[in-house]
Image (cartoon, rainbow, N blue to C red; front, side, top):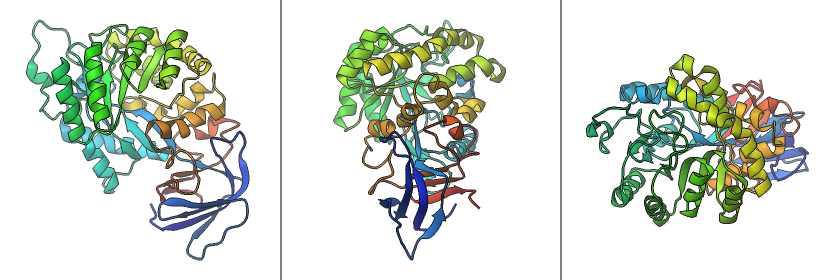
Length: 417
């Protein structure tokens, strides 16, 4: 990692997600962590490190809106009981891997708290810029309730004041209780609030089609988040669960595989975003059981996997903006960039890239700072061997075709020689 303050990228083929083709022959000046100037004429700077990127693509850093930094195991029920220090240390290489793949910003969808942001910002861990949700909120028996079936539920297992780093969620019921839980998560540093609005795959006792919170509870959560200038993201699969959530003010729908056309139209009308996570179902189906995913969860994957690609077509036709999400667990996190490959079966490369740049920046409230390399934007920048607008293959893998990764003007990886 280099801490040089000023860089001048010469002869770049610039990828601007708002343009249909690469902008050839651009010079890009980076200074003090931001993009100072972009020009089709040669730029000069005596203070800059000059990097000639002729023949290569320069593009904004990628944004993944649905990761789980502390999901070090596919079996989430098992990791809840693992030692806090072990979970934390195992998350460190996962953070580094995300950044190496070109993801300079990620939104954690449950589990990571403010301390993870502090660790990255202080240089204790190398990773992307983090927007954290703290612990997701789940009703009893919902997607965040990792207790197996029993005739006795130990209340201590979901104690809201207990610190279990391996727990992605906390169980809380009732309007007053969820209001307090939102306030607690925001006080502890959450950037946004995550809720469970339907059943899910990785949890043991809730059918995918089950509703999550009541509408009164969802409205209370949304109201509390809005009062602190932020928003709510909701795990939801079925059309009915999605419609309930967005009518109550939820801003982003996570997964959303079983959406239908009327519900997508409602989302577009209300300005809600979709964050599909297709790659996680491929991973769970192909290797979930071998890495410890419970059999009841493996059986639920098939219900949502095939619907994922169809959902992209439904969202696009309705005009719903789609962000990029991966939602991978444990060893499968290495497959993060494969989400581009799956989306390219339905969407154009430009649409897939927009989901991981300009749309992600909008969702995060950072449209003027992230997602494009324009004057005033944070200098999150990738140098890529290939043209992603023609073929997303150059973005796949572990960054083998991304020789340089810069985050906020600091070079994190440099293999340009």
